[in-house]
Image 1 (tube, rainbow, N blue to C red):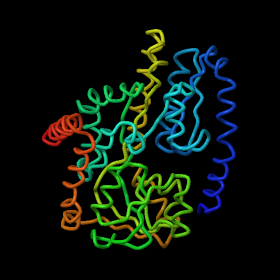
Image 2 (cartoon, rainbow, N blue to C red):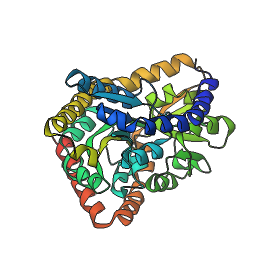
Image 3 (cartoon, helix red, strand yellow):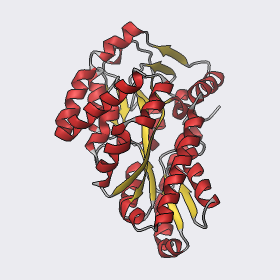
Image 4 (cartoon, one colour):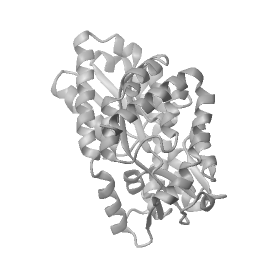
Length: 348
């Protein structure tokens, strides 16, 4: 069973390594560029979904060219906001960041936090990401406005809420401090659900749950398992309200400056990493839940029934309204396309 020490050590290591790592990165920048060593940072730990994607991308690039790819995991270069800033500044060539964090930069990316917009059925979600015009045509334009070449958006897993006390109704979340990413729409979602949204960096979540600074959090089940969050937040509730989505992108100046064959290589490597990762996530949630239940007798698992879900779903329109206020006409157009794309795969 993972001890809290391991996660605390991660936080300390993060703080100690960040300055040194960024310094070393800057020091080797020109040499690395000449050597065609591309730098790629993501938000997760070893073996997590973004790490699987990054290493599949790296493997394809290195097998099909003379280039090398250096992958940096969570904490090695800071938190999610840090690695995005480094990518926009050209220190990193590639970054994987979820729309939860990108939402402050690209408000429309918050669409994934409108509860009950995406279905819970894995097969339907995967088909949506493959075929959606909103995902594959509209989002790249939005990211390009921020100097980012969007290469892939992909789902990681259904969101699960963990708390220190079980709940089955919005009233059960009253006064519960639920950790959220620094994302305005996610704050709206948890306010609508009746909780008190509490933004907190990922590196502080375990300690926050352990000390009672927060009463719960949401994440895909594999993160709850790999981060040991079930040890300090043992009541898992499947509310069916959404999927954790992420995006892999490149610094646009870097990408556009590549020769055509290297742009093609990056696209092919992204496609190969996507296919590999989608295979990886199939069945991952069930596997992770089994590991959690084997590791702890204190864990409870609640899957809300349709009547219980309806009480939460009824609160979703106010979040959608908040999204439209934040994003204006662009957000309205995106949401319409999103819904049309979902209808197309749902009615297949």
